[in-house]
Figure 1 (cartoon, rainbow, N blue to C red):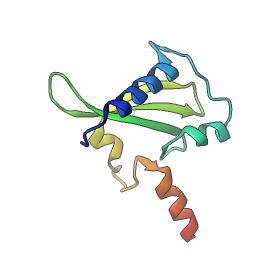
Figure 2: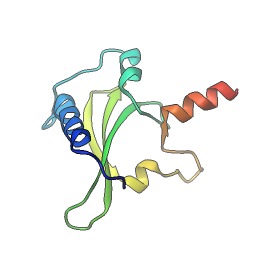
Figure 3: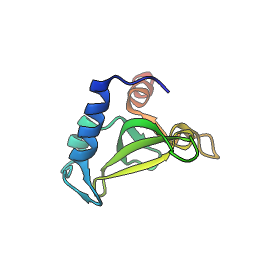
Length: 109
């Protein structure tokens, strides 16, 4: 896990508070085009997400990925083990494809 700067951490916390407040989203993405401007990853089922940062579980030390679902359902914050977020499914597809990788693959086609 990389060492984030204080500015990076503040930006991440601002994003979390902008997108979610407890369980009710403060911000709602209104179109896929808007979501694409904010997203960093596409889920293998098609949804758009913004990965915010990696963190550690206070009891186990496990590394967790904090992210926000943007599109197509209600905007909301989520967390899952980093290994699962960045990992592959049983059929070898990547669970969350970075959008840079997706656009590079499309350019090759």
